[in-house]
Image (cartoon, rainbow, N blue to C red; front, side):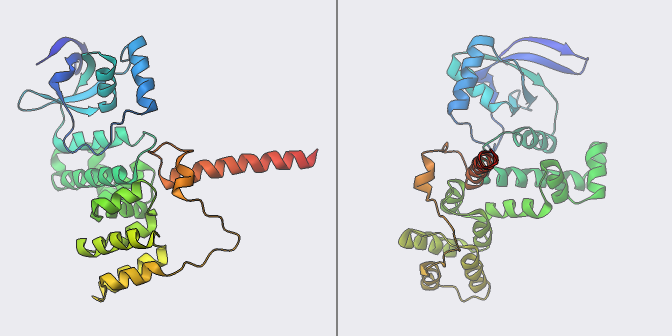
Length: 295
């Protein structure tokens, strides 16, 4: 099975050393493994110190071992030329594995909206499934589902509002080209949620209008498109007409294009993450100005 050695922990779990080639990724793993600067740092750390934190795996029926947490560490080992990795082996069913996989990865920085959307959906389905067979679930999960719905449980664990979790999950209804525009900041999150209610053909009209007008829909425009779809009135021409409307500029507003911002931020940054950094920098600038004025 590719296991080099193992050590018992508290008589329950084992740490074993696995050949990388013997491990399989989690099925439908929603999180990217990117060879970015952070990966480079991890590679350098492994080359110098080895893997300090074991990954988490579970045995499968076919004798293979599936990675629950540690896909980035495995990739870093590959890049570092290391062919083995330490792993904690834990028995888990599909639902338990999904919940642990999502929770362990949501702590990461730079998670794309599409990744968060898929992760929330996977955990929601796992919790619902556990709720249907509550006699087989752990006491903690069972009690949580008795007190609140599965969506509320996902929200509580993620530190989100239930409404925001639902909005993220709606993104899974977007066609891939539009979802990619949300990830790269070309389509704002809130309008994207409204557009997720359109059928695939209607979404293709929106995508075409985006390319034609070189403009992204405002929230009000997206809501009008959604409403016309709901009433059965939406056409490709009406989508283009709405998207072609000139947006009224906000008083004293400043608009920074994606092309302007992208040279200052990693490609993985979402529009929300960019905004957070910009606000923080402006806060520091304001404090500095105030201090200078007080001198």
